[in-house]
Length: 279
Image (tube, rainbow, N blue to C red; front, side, top):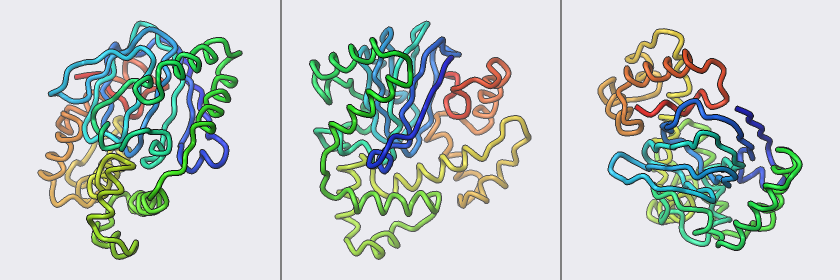
């Protein structure tokens, strides 16, 4: 599988972590993605893929691509036999300037790109991408499209600054400290976060803490779950286990088994490190 990514130019780099190109055969027909403190846009250039955004939701088909705001639970991604797409990994607040609706309306409800930008716009963009000369030209075209669609967004500075503080502390900062530092009420801050990110500051902090903890796990080595939980600031191992189940649908032990399965069957794969074979 070919994976190419790069950071966009300013001012997009303040909203976007990277633009990427993906082409090839997925390691599994279905992958599970634990929640991460980011939003995602995929422009699909191959056969339709399928998404289920939680155990209590139905699987939906996405032909033109999808838009996903910061999730609160794991979601399943079903690949066709061969996949080809370009996409954008946004910072938590980064998607808001490109949305015509509040991010809260899309929380754990992925939508097609057509629903966000309209049919004619996504059709034209897909046609241009499909005739581009390789992944680097495709990423340039995608960057130009994002620059063209960039809009002023009320409250973005407040949410960006506060989210950056949350990220810098790996989610450990008390929400009360955030309101004191910003000089706004907790109600106002939560409202802005819901509008621009889709979740409250408290929920974003939980996601940051969990994602940071998950990325410290080396599946090759033995894991002391009690020590890991304590180091991440969880009240105790039971609290950590409950949080783990809530975010991934897996127990910590089962998660480790699935990660090790991925490593055994697809060593060095471009998608290893976050996504998992669907359990």
